[in-house]
Length: 107
Image 1: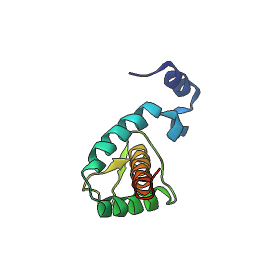
Image 2: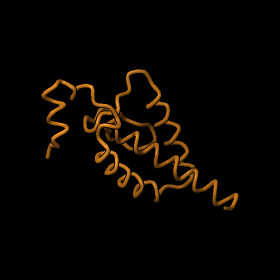
Image 3: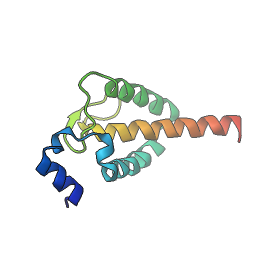
């Protein structure tokens, strides 16, 4: 279902310039998905995937698109992922890392 804002942007030609912040509902869905996945990973896998995703997101030409699955991440799986999905994954892995750091040092 297209929102009114998305429809207006398309009419005005702004849909092709869509950035990460323009699709918060998609990011939220990806965040829930990756949180569920990352909970089952050990610390080492989380760290390795975080490194790989961070490198990919920081690379030239990376686009945080909401649905076009064009990026593969070594150590994650064999699937291709949308840019917004990887942005959400990185945020989830950073949150896990912060939580673990706080748990080790205390409140």
